[in-house]
Image (tube, rainbow, N blue to C red; front, top):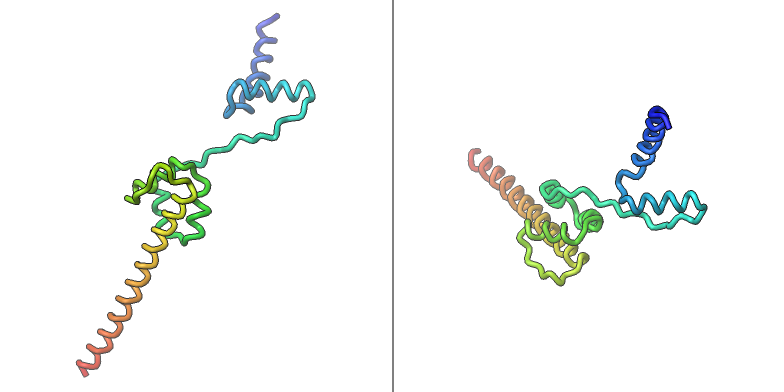
Length: 139
């Protein structure tokens, strides 16, 4: 076999390896074998892990409503949700399941949002009343 032939073979193999770059070698070989032998391909899809940035997630939670928080957090794994609870200083038990942790976080941020809205409404009401009273006094 000539070196040029070997170079051509390696370029073809390189293209095949590029297709399977996120899989293990065993998964790649099983997939190639099923395609070559004509067996039906297994329908198991690999679950892609969602990118996790704690600071970005905390900022999103502060500005979102309860339903958005629940759907957003369902995409994460339990360990990631536990790290969010720890960063938020929420007390939880290791036996708590993912759903209860998500509900705990959603309720926490919903209450924080509600308290902020109530305090803004309270401060806006009294600042407008104070301004009205001071304008009445100056007349």
